[in-house]
Image (cartoon, rainbow, N blue to C red; front, top):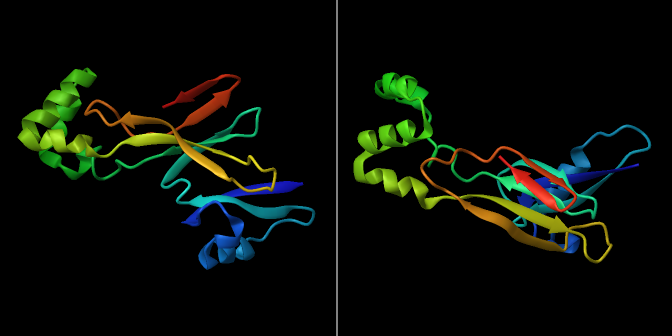
Length: 159
């Protein structure tokens, strides 16, 4: 049985050029007898992964987050926002709160974007030799953090 491993480490898709850090991380893993660990993909093929899903064709969809602490605000860190946050009943109410508290700076929150990457082993060599952005542009003030992806048949769901 093989265990595929996606690591957030430096690599470019060619296993000969995976970083020493990526290789060392694989060597440090302790797996039960009968299991083999192989490095399938690593940064920069994807970064900041929060979830992944495999489809029936062997493609790997990786949900990435780029907005945590920069564009999606933690109200708990801003105690003076708490009453307004608790009073918000709709997404529009929450966006209005951001605009009220941040003014013109609210528009800068849309600089980063959540995205979904798709990785695939096109050459049948056991590593991702194809990586591309599958979906992006999730950066509206009303958008939250990317947190899940599910691929089934011809559909991909992202939350």
